[in-house]
Length: 515
Image: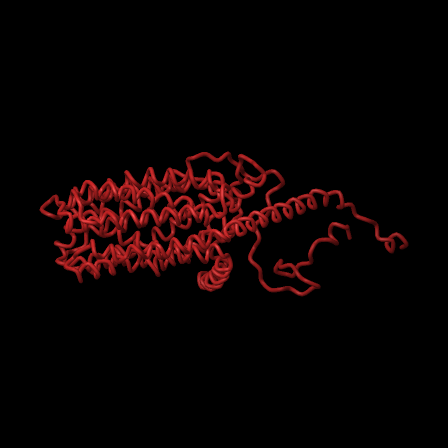
């Protein structure tokens, strides 16, 4: 027997490694390693961050087309504002429920292909909403709720891809581009809905549902063509100061359901339990979960009903109200996100927990400015104050997303972003449209009063993020320590395989020589 063969683990009949001759049971097939130096690599550009951003643009446009034409939908189906709130909440609730398993899958499948397939499906389903008869409002709620699965898949998958394309020094900018395009989609959706909705004797809302179909298919094609980065490769490139990233080895990727869907579902439940356990053991993630949930409640409440505040309390027309809020989102959201992204990257090492402190401070400033804007005054002043508040609010997003990427290990980032989406939805965003409309109804559809009651909740979220600042540096250091350890182990393994060829010399058995 050669010395190399002596070092190799013994295997059972099914190919499973054994310990002292005892098989531990069936194991998942391990993809074969590429020969040393044969891994596909690429120099990363800005294109991936734009492609992922386009997915948010289409998603935001599709969501806010409904918001922009909500008056016509309400009149066509003869429902109330509370029913329209249910239409929004149903989407958010399904999104939150699906996000966690989608995040689990994002850590295990080809994320760019999954995003492409999802966008094609949701674009078609969204268009079907324009065909619903006006006697079946419940069917419209079901269709819009089913679209929640779309963002539930694209958001954790896209955020995970961004974290694997860009290291810590570029993540802030990457997430800022992603968020900027989301605000562009929001503004476009409001404008399209409010312009097309009143057309055709109030039936224009049906046409509006088809607007995102072709752009959605185009973005899906871009995602399909986007190379899949290997998980954790950006962290390794950051450690080695390399400009190149390694692409995923999809040719040898094991099938998603190797033992059938039922077995996979059981594994997914167990895997989710373990992933959540890992996430909750990270102090930064625990505090941020609470912070994001409370802030998400306030942001969703304001984003959903601000046009109604303009109509009911400031007495603007539907088009003027939607146009004003769309302008607010674009004029405040894009500069705020770009500034926030630059601050997130440049200030990351200037003071303790910068990527948690920046969002906390921005949220407190934004909440204060919005509360001031609800003092009765001319609409011009209201818009200026809210513009400053929106800019401050959006500046927090890149730092927060980059901070979550820094603190979460690469293998559970999809589940990590899924956990945040789930927490923010179940404990925050899903209830916000209904709660806000219910409070406003108690005060004669006065959304000014409703907002003043809800906004102080944002300070609780900011306080939780400030508590997270004391842990993020240690949590991020553990991630890079694990990366360095894994790289050292891989290098040692490659060196062992490289020298094993020299050991493949058959040593004569002395007993055979004697015979």
